Every structure is written in C-alpha cells, then in structure tokens.
Image (cartoon, rainbow over all chains, first blue to last red; front, side, top):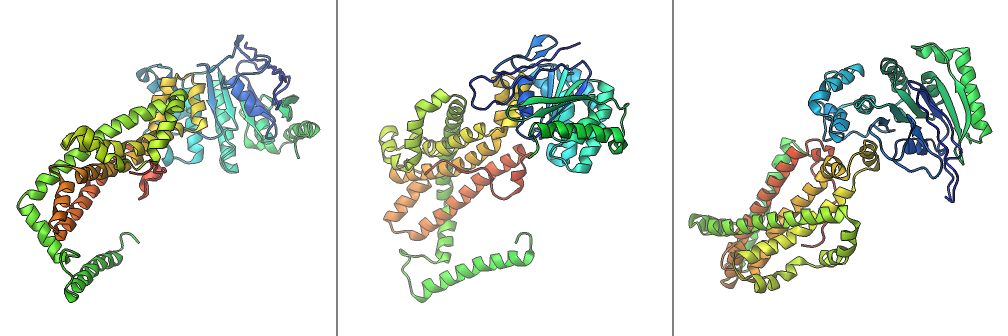
Length: 250
Length: 267
C-alpha cells in the first residue's frame, strides 16, 4: 500500500497554481485526473515527477517524500519526446543507459515490451519512420522499461486523432491489465478519463483544486461499447457538473 | 527544376553561351589581356600552370594551411563553445570579447598576424584558424542550448546527471548546428589562409596571385581563381559528405540547404 498525498499551499506566489490537493492512490490503481487547461494538472504531474518543487505540503511515494527526480517513476509526456538519433530500441533503452541498468540484461525485456505494444519488427527503425500513435507507444515502453512503481501520463494521446486515440485507450488498458502499474493519467477528455480509470479526480482551475472524485467500476477489460452505456453517460455528466461548478468550462 | 535532362542541358548551354559571348566580346573589341583575358587564354594559363607542376605545389601549400587552420580553429571553437554554453559564468565574462570579435572583420588582423608569426606556414594557419573559429563557436553554443524543454525534462525525470544530459541529449542534439558551423568554418579557413598569403608569404596560391598581379598576368590570376573555387567546392563537399553520414537521422539533411541558422559574423 502506498500513500500519495499532496498539499501545495498558496504562499506568496503571484499565480496560485495548486491549492490543498490531497489524495491517495492505491498500488496498482489507475487514476485519471481530468480538468480544463490551466487547472494545474500538468503542474501536479511535474511535482510528482520531481521536476518542480512544491511550494507547500508534500508528495509521498511509498511513504518517502518526493524531493527530486526518482528512478522508480516513469513519465509519458504529451508529445512522444523521442530522440531522433536513437532507434526505437535505443529510445526504449534510454532509461537503462541513464540508470546504468545494463543493456545486455535489459534488451530482452525491451523486446518483450516492444512486442507487447505491437511494435515487433520496428526495433531498428527510427522515430521519423513511425506514425504518431506508434511513436507514443515507444514512449510508453520507454516509461515502463525500468519497471517504475508509478507511471505518470500527461495527456499522452492529446496530439493524436480521435480514432487513433480510442485505439490507444484500448491498447493502454490491455497493457495496464498485464502489468498492473499504478497510473496517474492526466487528460482533458472526460470520456477518456472514465473509460480508463478506476477512479477519476476532477480538478477545477485558478487555483487548481479537487472538484470531485468518482469511482468507476465497470468490469475489465472494457470495450469501447461501455462509452454508449447509461452509467458511462452518468459518470461523464457528473464530471461535467463538477467542472462547471468550478467555473472550468468557459 | 532538378533531375530534368532538358533543364540540365539548358544549364550547360547557358554556361557555354556565357563563355562564347565573353570570348567574342574580348576579340571584337580587342580588349587587352591585362584588363580582361579571353576564356581561351585563361584555360591556356591553367594548362601551363598544371603542366609545370607550379600550381600543384602552391595548391598543396594552401590546402595544408587551410586544413591545419580548420582543425586548430575548430578544436578551439568547439571547446570554448561548450564552456560558454554550459557555464553562465564563463559566458558572462567572455561575452564582451565575443561580441567585439564577432563584429570585427577577422581578415583585417592578417597584417598583424604576419608581424607576430612571420611569413611562413604558421601565420597562415593562425589566420585560417582565427577566421574559422567564430562560426563554429557560435553554432556550437546555439546548438547546445537548443535542446527542447520536453527532452531535458525527460532526462531529468530519469534522474540523469548533468554529464549524461550533455552526452546523451545536448551534444547529439547540437550536431546539426555544429556541422553547419563546420561547413562555414571550412570555407572561412580558406579565406583566412588566402588573405594571409596576400599580405606576406613565400608560397601558396594567394602569393602566386599576388605576384601575377605585379606582372599583369591577369589570365593567370583568373586561372587561380578557378582553382580556388574548385578547392572550396571540394572541401565543402567533404564536410557535407561526413555530415550526411553522421546526421542520417536529421530530416533537414534531406534538403539542399543546411537548416540551422548559419551564424558567426564576418570572415
């Protein structure tokens, strides 16, 4: 059981990005964080990734405060952020090189994960030879290669077209069911948030606060069909209401 | 416009036409050879120069000076560029010098360099290095600083050290800029060597041109300009070929022009 609580006091800063964020994510849980632009959800992830210090409160991973970048956290950014001079395999092995985990030992695992996301045969290709969806899968594998305790995803499919995005959602669920990582998934799509998550955290802007928290208990694996169901619609409506209450949608 | 045989023939035809008109005008108006020689006279001078091994000997000297200056200037520019890009303090203190030297036409220093380093090989190498130095240094700095924030964040999120960020991200990321700098540095080195030869030398194509000027051998000077142009093209294509192989991953390499801004002030 790991506790992840985050309070980030106002302070003297001109912009109050996050206020009184306090929640816990269970091990192996998939939590979506949804909110409009500028609600501080990316700021929250940056603090959790150790890229930015909190100005108040603290974030704990396995009861240890996050004070800087950690080796047991994997991050997937909005864009794939692949290095064009590295092949697919080379990009996936970047964390291995940085953390000196030994390429010989980890290449097998890398190939296995590449296979898991359906990119077998592309190991020696270079990023520019891949489509946007494929690039983001490479980024996902890179985030998983060093077996992190926590996976942070910052609108990873935001730049993809709607159809690719749905396919990637199904794909991500499949991978998650197989690997059972603790995931914090930031998105501004309410449907994506509900489809993927065990729980959805709704954030409202200026300052970023928790507007609502709801539990989604559709059985897994979920197919895209759940999106058309009654309960799914009710969840989405509840998120909308919370966003509106916070002045989130203009 | 590329790859079309008709337009290629037109291109050749235009060159041939230019030479013909030139030749015709010189003969028609009986222009003296010490003002404007006819193309045939230039080619004759070129042939005589190579037949007597005179041109080859001097070309070899100039080439040596250029390449040594290029290597010396590049190594220094690369080292200083890294220091400036990575350390705000180094940048702060060197900035006034950089600004002053960048705007200054470096070739104007050639007479001083001859006084300090003599009329032998060394002064030409120093002059070539000095002129080649700035474009590469500026491009190295810009390149090292151009790493996208997302990529830096990715490295940081993996708990990478500063050294790892440099070797795994900043340096490869800067390579397109560095090669653009090397390309200019190569041509600039040739300029630096030739100018220093003009000012004071015992050998080299620049010195040869200078002495031909005294004897009013204008056809000879034209023939050396042709050689210099060929040498410049050759050196440039060597850098280009290396770049094409190293930067196979850079999409801008597929274009004809090097994409990163070519900076570095005046030669």
